[in-house]
Amino acid sequence: MSLEDGLFEQRVARIGEIEALGYKPFGKRFDFTHTVPEILRDYSAKTAEELVPEIRVKIAGRVQTKRPMGKAGFLHIQQNGEKFQLYIRKDGVPERDYALFVLLDLGDIIGAEGYLFRTRTGELSLHVEKLEFLSKTLLAMPEKFHGLEDVETRYRQRYLDLIANPEVRPVFVTRAKIISSIRRQLEARGYMEVETPMLQAIYGGAAARPFVTHHNTLDIDLYMRIAPELYLKRLIVGGFERVYEINRNFRNEGISTRHNPEFTMIEFYQAYTDYKGLMDFTEELLRQLAIDATGCTSVPYGDLTLDFSGLRRMTMREAVVEFWDGIENRPTMDNVRDPQWLLNETGKATAGEALAHLFEIHAEHKLIQPTMVYEFPIEISPLANNNPDDPAMVDRFEIFIAGMEIGNAFTELNNPIEQRRRFDGQLDMRERGDDEAHQMDEDYLRAMSYGMPPTAGEGLGIDRLTMLLTNRQSIRDVILFPLLRPEGEIGMADKLRRLGG
Image (cartoon, rainbow, N blue to C red; front, top):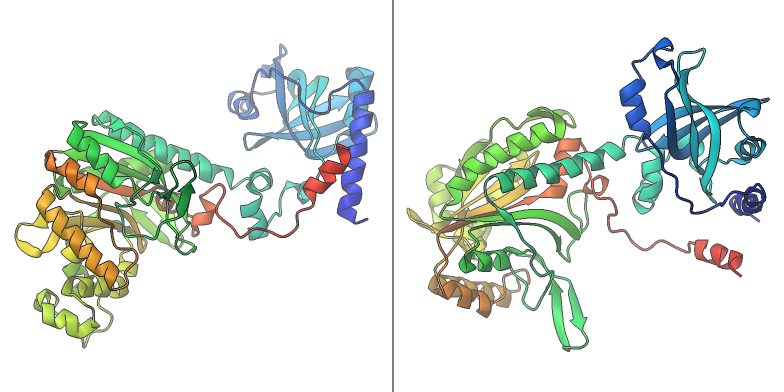
């Protein structure tokens, strides 16, 4: 038997001892009066004299440390990311409660009732008068509740990561603040939250490879959505003029520090505006988002300080010229407007694809401070409206921060005849081997044919925004349960099966 198995068996045996004292080892209601963070917030500044007369509380949490000292002892419990000390005396509690204290293992969940006081060292503590057992832990906690450093274990067993590493919890608290701030700002501007299908017969709204599944009753293949865009724009046609969805998207692509196959976005659409209107709104949205999430518009990210007080604006062509690697061969604005120069420089099939390629290799990773890059080639923007001054370009912008794309927005194409032509162009790209090109969506064309008002729409990546605003370098650090390869034999099911007979 391994050391781990021996500890497991020992803790299982403790269940009987706890039951013999009259406690239930699993599952009992406990009505606490305060959380640990509330006690620390409300009473940490009070002196010992100010804690008289007695302030009685009932609290609950997970045992983090245990220090028996003869006929007395100390515990620290953890709740909501905070720890608090409990003091228990053998002559100050019922006999069975002190016997329970002796049996406690690190990780057990308990409830306690008593009054607040300060120890000789001045630490705010609970003088326990009654102890209750709430749940038994069968596995060993990480040593001293810290030191869980194995990255694979932290992602795979996020529950243990949250228990053992106190710096992890604030990341997900901030993530919740980000989502709440976005929702609040949109609804203050009259947007309505909606839900659209996650299973789609025709996937669209982005250039990506989908996950395929099968519906048995209908006997058809369906796709996990890669974006909700085309459904949200159907709602614009139907008369909902400002809509948004905080949505889960699925793309059957690579995994990296910036990519997870399942990710969260906010997409919003507004009738009677254009991409320039969304540029102004986005600048306000991100500024307030930084304040709501961090308290400031200057945010640390690695060795950088990101300034969310405003966003720089530049065209894609300007970005290629400014950030071109090397001085001798730096192109001019005339070069990047010349289709033949672009084709000669890259060997791509079209000038638009060539410009986008040069932007990706020369400029994208150098866009550190929050920047909006606008005017995109029509070939890579099949759902965006034409630029009235340059038929080769569309009215689209993307947001880049710390070398990452954070968002994408454009004036929506609302001409069904032109949209059909664009879809045909995407079919040509698929025939050339681009399996991420858009599919033909006949129903979307039909919806557009009933008349779509001038509209602009935008999508922002929640996961990457959270990375930036929590100073995390990997997307896995900001997703509670990132996708991982299946691990080897776990064995826990067999252990519990044996206990159940």
